[in-house]
Image 1 (cartoon, rainbow, N blue to C red):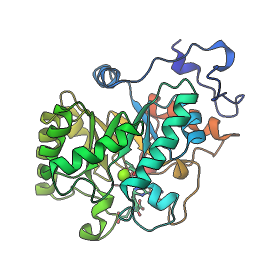
Image 2 (image 1 turned 120 degrees about the horizontal axis):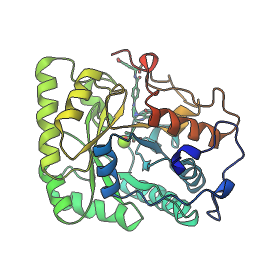
Image 3 (image 1 turned 90 degrees about the vertical axis):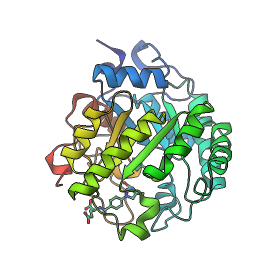
Length: 298
Ligand SMILES: Nc1nc(=O)c2c([nH]1)NC[C@@H]1CN(c3ccc(C(=O)N[C@@H](CCC(=O)O)C(=O)O)cc3)CN21
Ligand SMILES: CC(C)C(=O)C(=O)O
Ligand SMILES: [Mg+2]
């Protein structure tokens, strides 16, 4: 049995983040790297990603077996109480990235740390994007995520050529919610779907290691996943055919200040602790039972 499969079931004794000791003498998991993510994609092992914004939640997510922790600019909504992510600054992202990196460092972690480039921090030029990415890398990020289609391809190439692993993000891109007219499903029309596929292939060719697909019809997300050769897709509201899944941590713990999106499952249902809920999420992603039809109506 792999160490992944020994992750505590919901309600199992608490993991012990700080100190790095694993319960029941479990071996420490290997670090998740870009190479490991590529291997998981090739072998069909699902990639489980959760957001975190502080040290303690990041360490507990890691201890529960999450492959990547994402410091999302969703922190503007869940931490700052705003109605969009547009106001989040690079300095705020740097601060939370540092908090999460510190939590992972204290807890002999294995999860790969991804951080979002916020709105306005990469839009002016490749040089601006690189300088912003360096701020987050120096705060402890191991991969940088940025939203956008074809126009970001040259930025992705510029960053990856300089040694910064990149996660791209297509479909619903929350930073452009004003232009999209709301948090809506993307890629429904045939020409939108074609464009998304073209963008995905160009982003992979530019060196993107991961690609978040948000609020995309399941069939389109599956088809993009299969057409990509090296880049692993991470879905949110994109069905079960992607190489991995991501959720905002607060959502999967049943906490949301607004209306919960349809693609969320509350993993506190049936769990007796937060670490139990994280472990249940990891198990459900790995075995392919999350998401199911309840979470996906498009
Ligand atoms: N707490 C939280 N969870 C998220 O998943 C999340 C954030 N914040 N902030 C940044 C973006 C914004 N996201 C959102 C926000 C709202 C919907 C939403 O209301 N979805 C509706 C569908 C609406 C439609 O199809 O017209 C739903 O019922 O799922 C979806 C994604 C995803 N991201
Ligand atoms: C929802 C994920 C993909 C994200 O970008 C965020 O949390 O900011
Ligand atoms: Mg984001």
